[in-house]
Length: 550
Ligand code: G16
Image 1 (cartoon, rainbow, N blue to C red):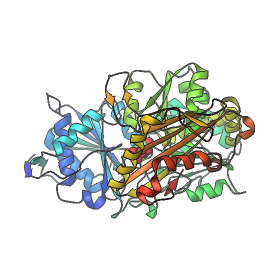
Image 2 (cartoon, helix red, strand yellow):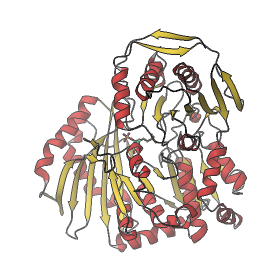
Image 3 (cartoon, helix red, strand yellow):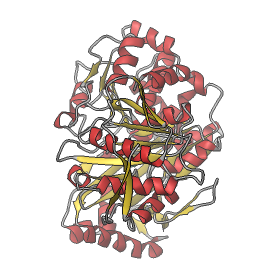
Image 4 (spheres, rainbow, N blue to C red):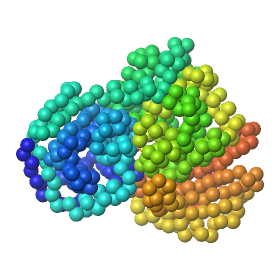
């Protein structure tokens, strides 16, 4: 193998965010941009003994620039001396599938090419992140070191060889290394069959239960056709938009009620099947809608925790659960009832890894449509949908009935997120500073029946490795006359690619069953108004209303 050393210079701002480095495709297309990041990654993770004998997994969600990026990562990995490179056929692997393959094949780690739920295509977004040997996203100390290295880089090494054929399964030898193209779906299907009662779910479909799964022209299409239609016997046509496209058909592959509006409209109509679901660009997020009943992700985490015992993998009980700080506290009440620990972590899946590895938690989730368990170290869209199906197969109740009985037992946490997107960075910072300066004076103040209990800038103390992560969101906690809790949380997104995004998370617990099932925005109207007022958002940004409300 002939290795070339290429001279380069640092790019500004190659800082990985909540979930790796995400930028516009046009930014990634600049000469050396991706190579600088990959070289910095390899420099940081290289063990003293080098990469000989080690395996690297590479996969992506099939978006525009996936192929080009994969060929570059292969050639740079070969120059580093990796002995084996495992790649999904045609470069396709969902994010949870990569996590599983890293664990299953005891790989050194994996490179995931995806910008998740962000739009794709030549004018869309691209992204790259590294997952470590436990299958999970690299922790902050690694991503910080990659960034630091990228700011001083002057050269990188790359092998001069022809592009790998990603379309044909099998092994090719390049120098001392092998490149193996593997089936993108097979290992993941085996894992799901170990976790869930496939016979019960098959019987559910045989009984006439109907479903629509919208793959949003993203990575889960091939997985969903195989699992739902071929193995579980759902009729052909159950999976729609099942062919991965480089631009996701021009849509935003984000499974929420705005971007999955066709599914939402169907589920709210007279023609609705029993169950509707969708997943995102890279297959880690999920949306679940019952007939006439969308399920908020925070509620879903609580319902799945309360009912996980219906699936064989969780029948013996759960070690504990975790949610990201802005995720609603609905799951906390379930954990309390089950007598298990409940952890509150910063936003981003990487913070669950230590708790999962230490067997302190079995399930975890985020308000942003992500849930998963200790079977991998990523959130997992199809896993969540299969757990729902397993629960419905065992209980034979509707999603609506399940949710309503959950609220009757635990109370309802009304919850919403208001996003203000593409704000000029200095204006967004001004909003956060304005809120921050008020925090010390808020405790004890009363706003229309709500008294501020505490207000702070959230810091997370990892109970396993002792690391501390500061500035993870500003939160204001309230109690009302009935001693029930409410919360407002503010934070800046770490995944946007243009300007800054302010996220406001607003939540209120309602214990009175007669007040359950109302329209969320109405139920939270007073608190939403207060959230806008405390942030002085309109004056500081000129925005009187959020761009996206979920
Ligand atoms: C958003 C969500 C987080 C999520 C992250 C990455 O981050 O709020 O909960 O962990 O995206 O998710 P994915 O890998 O599916 O893109 P942020 O920082 O934009 O709020």
